[in-house]
Length: 130
Image (cartoon, rainbow, N blue to C red; front, side, top):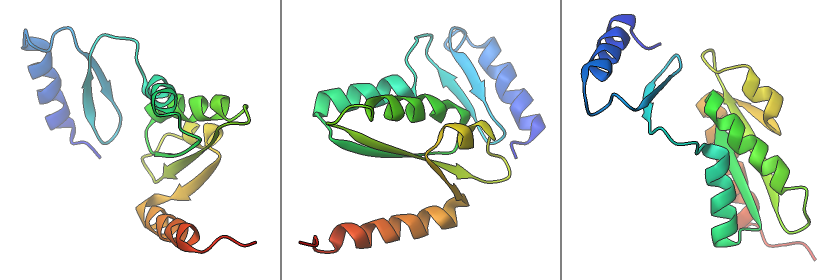
C-alpha cells in the first residue's frame, strides 16, 4: 500500500510545480503516475503496435485498471481471422476487481505469472505435433 503521507507530499509537489501542472495524476493503491494531457491509453498503444508490426498474436498481462483498455483492444482485434490476442489479469489484494471482468483469464499474483510463463516457454519450445 502506498503510504498516505508520501502520497500527500508527492501530490503537493506535483501541484506546486510549473513543470507538472498540466499533467494528469493517475493513482491506485500502489503507485502515483503522471500522464501527459493526451487521449492515448494502453488500448491505443496495443492497436498501434499490432498495426505497425503486423502482429498475428499478442499476450498482455495487466494488474491495473488502466490495463482494461488493452484487454478491450485485444478482444476487438481478435474478432478477425488474422490476429489472436489473450489478456490476463494479475490479481492480488490491491488489484481492481474490474480487471477480471475484461480479461480472458486471471492469475493469482506474481508467483502464478512466473509459473504461467515457465509453462508457456515449455509449450513454445516443444516440437509441433504432426
